[in-house]
Image 1 (cartoon, one colour):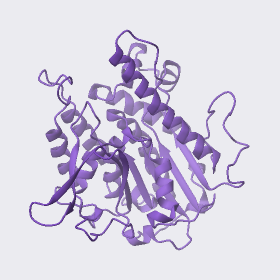
Image 2 (cartoon, helix red, strand yellow):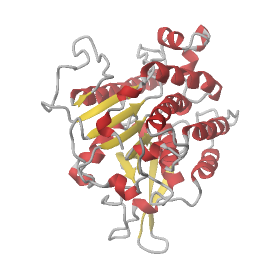
Image 3 (tube, helix red, strand yellow):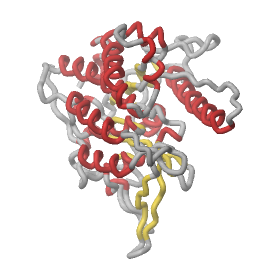
Image 4 (cartoon, one colour):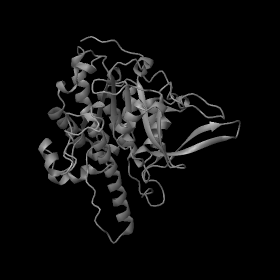
Length: 385
């Protein structure tokens, strides 16, 4: 099947044609698992469009959303990078950034150097590229959280967005934000990296207002799928894409599902951290519940013993979108079932978000999951280019 590469404005166009969204979770170095699945997605779609060497996921998806490590991958894909190339760059970045140091134990300062992450992102995305750069070929949505106001900030290159252009009062438009800086902000996980300051307004020399931004995973949107859906359809964001099972397609990829042990501990700090992790996982479950509740979802999973997979329930009466979700439960049974060559003792270690030594196994796990689960028939013809 032949296709024509579209311009950025054509990707954003609200002409009633079907739209496609890709959403990528946060999860530290476990993002390499996502890249393993993305290789399969790219291969399936490339075959559909005549095995063209220049096919990229930015040709197919009209909006690519990412949080934290997912923001790094999303930005690269939106700039037209091939998944194989991005995987190589990602492994280099993670190996450099997550280098342990005895001078950074994580008690009084961030565990890792923000300078290394900054340098790697500038190298990957370009130091001079802004969110409004022509180098970004399709819609891009980066999920961050502004720490000094406590508000989640979805930042996009949507040219019709309310805050894309400069505004009265010296407000600096999102289109002028350095791309590497927005991605760095989304990946600034507390404890691991210091917050990122972004200049958000300027009313003259010396009158610059900056916001402190941290990892978007500290908001309810470590999985950015629901935020991407809201951004694409809620009137205030000024995209207004139509809803419907044949009108909107959302593909969501995770970085590995883990369980939270919230059992009591005599160490108060440990119990607090476990409880916060449990809250993040609850947010993830709620997102999947909501999306399955409003969609046609061939990949719907069992939410719990009472709700099941919501296959007979629809909040709107009819599906508001077609929704696919792929992730891997990082449990012993699932991991060894997909990748028998992984040592049983290694399974628990794969849950770590900052150990580059796990990347080869995590990548193999993502490839195995995608090979077994992602078939050509899951990309419906109504969403063809």
